Length: 291
Length: 292
Image 1: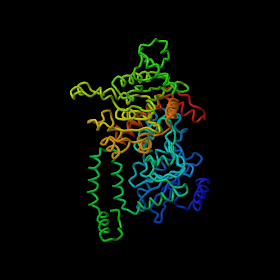
Image 2: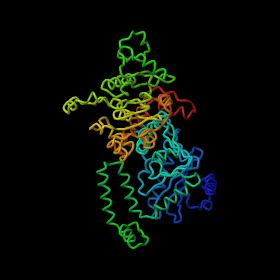
Image 3: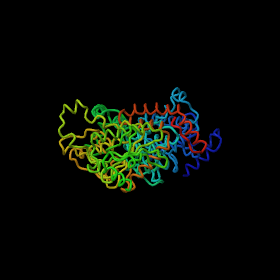
Image 4: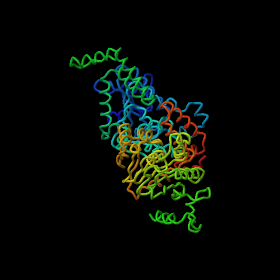
């Protein structure tokens, strides 16, 4: 909380404050200050990239600028050799309560199609490193879709998930109809998409949408712990494992097994595989080099 | 219950009873005749929920070709009815549909099945553009389970039982049971049900993802109608697009499904209802959809 207050206090100052006040390097992107998100590295070894959506007055409603900044932060973490996993979270009250409706209220079909509206919003689903969504409070519409683009979802006890776009006369536009259905099954997905009704954390876990529930204040530390567990493994092999799991949604079972086999064989071309198996046989801790 | 007793009483009379007795318009199809195997009406405060009740009580609603044809006719009528925004299909308290009519298919040959495309039109429910809710009390077995799974949403009564017992008759599910059940409940449970014929109860069905809600027996149908009303309050045009996108999850890869969803999403910006919905949101008022 102290971190949030300090950051909020700094952000309330004009953005061109004296460099001394902004010496906390974490608030800078590689070339400027983030306006909509907070970015830092967490974990004992600073190996978990941490992105916090920060539009409190809008309950973290996703606007184009915020999604661009999330993309920039992800680019930086992908390039950072220290970072082995990434956690994305919001506030205690809201992960992200939707997309910014005012921003899209007056768009036309022509503008949407021609400008490929929402195209870059899938950046999270293109990340090679494992991404954990830590969802406290509302994950609705685009916020639910953002969480589902991540690899793992942890939920706080008061989390609520929903796709209420139908109530605005539209449909989910960033994968909601596809990922929700694959996660929770047809009946529940149809019910959520056609009525706009929400489900709570317990329903979300029971239906397979999230894998763990934690008390609100423990959610983020536990998500970071999960990130640390992942970051202790080989980044190279983790990327291959994630690629294989994601392929389950793109290929038939036979071809998915084919891809997995090719990736599995490929791990035998790596130092990390040799180190991991040798360490196991020698009953010692493996030291991975991401190679 | 009163409704069912009255209907049962009417139906027990000879089918060519005097028109005065059958003045309850719901018993007529729009084609001008009377339904023999089903009861059809509109429900909800605004009469915007189409309601189809399977009605072969002596056969525990076993699905025969005639019944499925009538269901198709009722669905055609509701699709064309501008008042109707959602449809509920249900059976009796004892049975949603306890299977297909075995006597009807007992002596069929492979040649007749293949040449006559046996069961082809039984998938009509899966072709409906408007949202369909199955309200399952009691037995949904074999073709009955398959019929429920063709619907978009399944609500179950506390005593509902789902099963695919075709294997015990020396055949296999023929209307999507092996496909929809597996996608809904996972391989192990689907294999177990299909290979043993064993049933699962309502709690198992919810926990496995087959149904999304369970209600006490007498509350099931009213709650299903309420869900239909909730859906019917939205734009019919946009609901059809939403349903199309969700169904595409079972036909396309994730990447291509996202592609289709994006195209449908962009297309909503060509509709009046999308503009009305978002404008109403920003202006903090209730949206008035025109299905346009």
